[in-house]
Length: 105
Image (cartoon, rainbow, N blue to C red):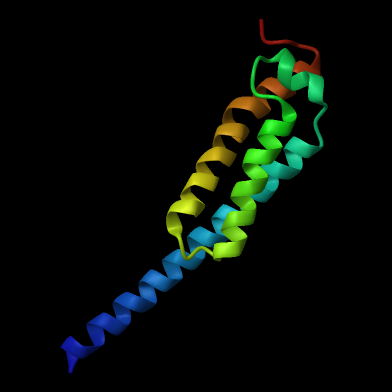
């Protein structure tokens, strides 16, 4: 009887993990997209990164694909998480330094 329960438990754990990854992906991508859309365009060129439209397009497409696939293609969610985290950890601090007036050079 215990052998038959193992696949059911495994499927349940996998479905919960996929749902957690989906929620995390949606949250990170949404925050990154909102932050990107609320920034001024010239700031992106001033810090030497992709233009605002490119970042908004990349993150927006990843968010749309994550929503459309509902996390069933976990690789799409992972690519979206990576794009959003690159924006949040690389571009966002540069924009923050630029807008604070401190500069980064």
